[in-house]
Length: 115
Length: 113
Image (cartoon, rainbow over all chains, first blue to last red; front, side):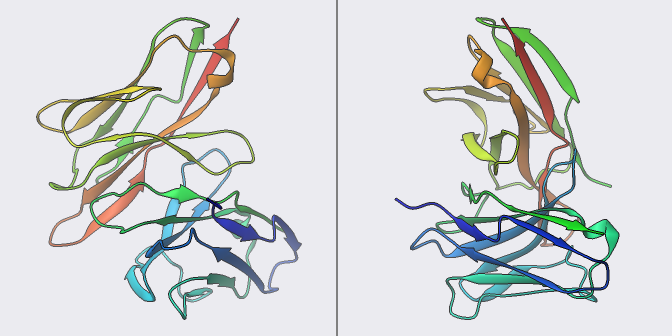
C-alpha cells in the first residue's frame, strides 16, 4: 500500500514570497491533516479536512495560510506572504475515518526555510 | 490552558525497559490516546493506541489510568534503533463541543549500548 506522498521535500524562499505544498493521502482515506512542526517541537495541527470539508482550522493563520482539498483527495497548503517564523517542516497525514483519534499515517514532510 | 506534557529526554541502555509518561489534564471523553515515534527527517510513525486500561501490541504497551489524565508508553527491551523522539497525541476538550488534536511536547529517548 502506498503511503502519504508530499512534494516538494525541501523549499527555500525569501520572506514575503509565496509557496505551495502538495499532499496525496493514502487511497480511500477520508480525513487529511496538515501539521506545522517547528524544530524541537511537536507537530501543531493547522487544518483537518474530512473529505473536502474543513473539520478544524482554528490554528491556521488565515491571513497568510490557505488550504484546499477540492475533490476530497489531494490537498494543497499555501503560504502567502511567508515570514521568517514560517520556517518549519510541514507534515501531511491521513486517516481512514478521522473520528475519535483514529490512527494517522504521515508523509515525509516538506522542509521550508524562509530567508 | 489545556496541554500535554512529557519529559524532554530519557536515557537508557540496550535491553532495558523504558516507560515514557504523558500528562493530559483536559482529555476529551471519547477519544483515543495515541503514541508516535519520529526519526530525524521523517514523519511520525504510529506505535500504539488505547482508550483506557492496558493495551499491548508487538512493539509496546500502553497503560492508561481510570481518570485518563495521563498515559504511559512502555517499550520492552529497547535497542539502539529505538533512539527517536516519542510523542503522545490526544484530543483535548477546551470547553463546549470542540475537541482539539494536540501532540505532546515529545520525549527524546537515547539508547546506549
